[in-house]
Image (tube, rainbow, N blue to C red; front, side, top):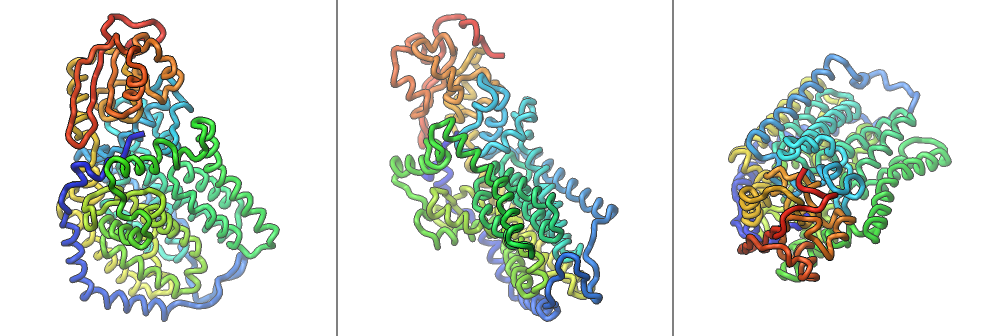
Length: 593
């Protein structure tokens, strides 16, 4: 598990970036010109909203209503083709510019995926305590191909496929809730005209996969409410289960999803309770498995929350060494302000305004909000992140507020379904076709303008991209010093190294993890002493890491290793590299494969 970059690092000391502030100013100027038009449209929606009760299952729809849009092989195949084309194009765009695998987390995720098979202790032993395992398990087969591992494409392929799936189900949800394909097209425009979101879809990060499970969960719950089919309820439960093994915010969604299952359909309470219990058992099995895993592997079911590699431990170390507290720590209102600033930087002003107007239009149309009530689940990550920023040791830095730098801006991506779907509620079936198509064109133009504004400085100036560029660990002098030394002198043999600390070194040099021993290889780690020279030929010792602690606790065991390189760096821990003095290696472990 890698340590987060401390706020006192070089990245944290950079001056604020002001190009987004210019975008905010431009948007404010446009509000006077466009705001009145949109508000008139919302009032028209309210006047045209039909307040008749929603037909129940088996009831006929009123004769004056058009039937909802249904699946059309020709039109929906075209939509699917566009989704795939846009996703592949965005992956190529960012990969060709060397931007897809620059995040420290993305590099570490590739290490986690690679280690599932490429390790002295492959399989279950390589599942850690903090990061949930599903992304690593899905990327693991692809990560065994050296090129896909070293470039990060193994994870990017998973993320791109997940994003395409999320886009498809969001499109279907918008069409089926509103009864209009124009609403589905506006929903897709909200996704595809968000360059920060397209960037995330090209990276080996877990957000796109979590987005897919969240959208699939909501879509299947919507289908369950409409049809009462058991397969839809089962699909929603499985999506929730897999989501809880991808990112923690899905845990927060579960009780609200259970409540929806309980109230979704007019059935006998015995049936409702039975369905809700079934959903709870299947979806809740994910968190239960993770608690059991942490208890079995680390002796603490809450190790992911308060263990040595948890966000809590990282924050405690930061406070103890730097006396720097997160600005949002203990401040709920301030946390909400930081998260709102994050959303502005990631999505821009106009998607946020359209979302608010879409929410108003949705609530003004009783038929629409009753039918699409499950969409409220998309709002759950908002209080989750605000609470986590205030009370769960989660940092978020934005360039417009202290400490005026970039860190964890991708947390805002959790609200992508809201910002894509809610504007679609401005285009319900009640509107006359001419007004509906006119509003669609107008809203798409606003989104195009916003996208152009975000991209005005180039891809590297996108907020989420810039965070990765500034904070990438592979640019650090310490990582580069180890890479340079091993490129010149490494001649094979096992390396003793701390887990998660040298992912850039391994990717850059192509050294397989089965050629290393770290604390994640617990059986081999325990066998190191008293004769480590029997197991390893090289040692990479970083200040204050697990290898440093091992060597400090038992100095005589390492007398047969020669110190070849020792470096110290400003704002970073030092590093020392050792080589075994005696030639040859014991059979059983051997040299590098």
